[in-house]
Length: 212
Image (cartoon, rainbow, N blue to C red; front, side, top):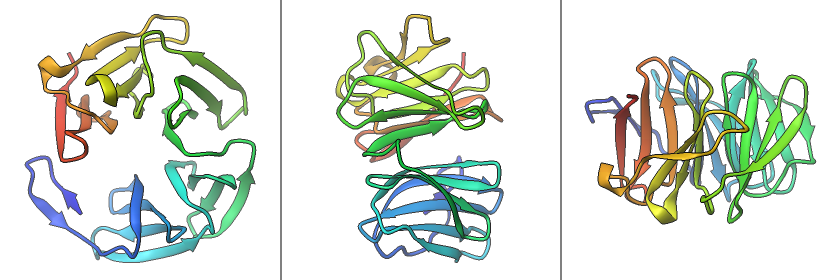
């Protein structure tokens, strides 16, 4: 289902399986990973029909779009690159497991394994890796970056959202329960409108916050 910012439903399409991750490809196409059915689907949101249904033969729980490729994280096969034709063209199998992932505007994939505390960074251009631990943060559930490439992290168990402005800076809380944050399960940043979107209340609502 897709809604506009006023909460009005634009349309929907039926998926056979349980959808997990979604990414915007362009103004009228999205990608969706479907777990248990082991597929990645490309959907036209003007015609509300499938463009591609790609069998990946694995449960895939993270999805980004980079340089004309859907990149999906699969639990056993690692990163799989799917070009716009729907063909799988590349696989990186040394980055796998059930991950929360986010692609920054600098080509960095930020990812964290479910149930762990350390955040990893993988650059899709130069293939460099780094990792760091956010002091005071346990078991993050959502990652995103703003247009200045500051990293924002949601913590479901403590009703908070942190920001880290550089790899060497100290993370600080920018939103908590006093702002209405309640068990956030995912976050994303709208660079055009400078707004943070939080999937809140254990995925029962979406909150929008304007960057101060």
